[in-house]
Image (tube, rainbow, N blue to C red; front, side, top):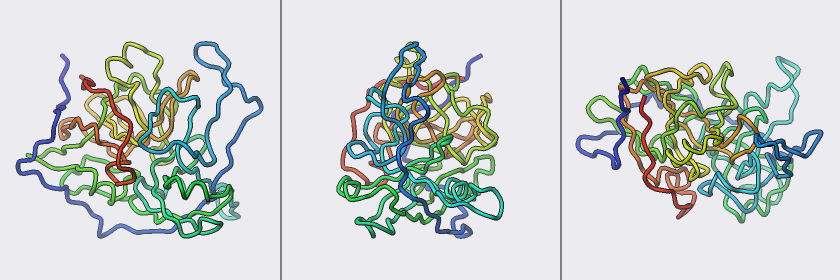
Length: 326
């Protein structure tokens, strides 16, 4: 028997309160990286799931004409990170050689503040808007005039704050990659023992692709495959935007992503679509919860660009998206 996940069009406001957190116990650390150069592998061709070879720009670098709030689907790009991509190129003599970049990936949380510390744009501030696994980039949004002044190789330092965040009244809810700043502005509320979480879309777990099988959930993202035209239409996945806060059901991302009935993972869309088999818009996890303690709220404005005040307006989202039914 299918049990519907509670999903309402507007948030209930009666007796709604902000969830309690352990923010006073968190540790804030400085981590840094360099603005990365785009990467092209041995062949620039990408083999699509339809058998077509494509030549498209991809990950890394500074994307000058796209940013959070813009469409994630339908662009002439593949896995585009619509912002400034950071990678720590340092090498460590203690532990793994890539330890500095692993630390950048782990410590960074969505909503953290970033500051340019070298080059023509020194002193400019931005916001962490995602983490892209595999390529291992942290993605930072800066205003367009700042991106035009940034130079490949410029250093950017983050005020990393959020790993270890907990909701004491919801011990079964796991928080990952989520800064207290974003949680406060997101509009997550508690009503009658449930968390009300604003999202733009619900996504069925059966369309999740690249990233499944990883052993952790704090170093990257999981791709939403758009190869099933029927599910794309049913759940309006063609209207996904960079920065959209979405719920994947049923998905448990606590120890790496796996399909688990009765569990919901809410995350943020961090990179654009891909025609490569198993790939699509990427989602970095933020909250993992039992469905019994969650009520999803359909809010087209649940996008980082608006929630964090990074932009005044974003791309329109198609209405009428259906909620997932377990």
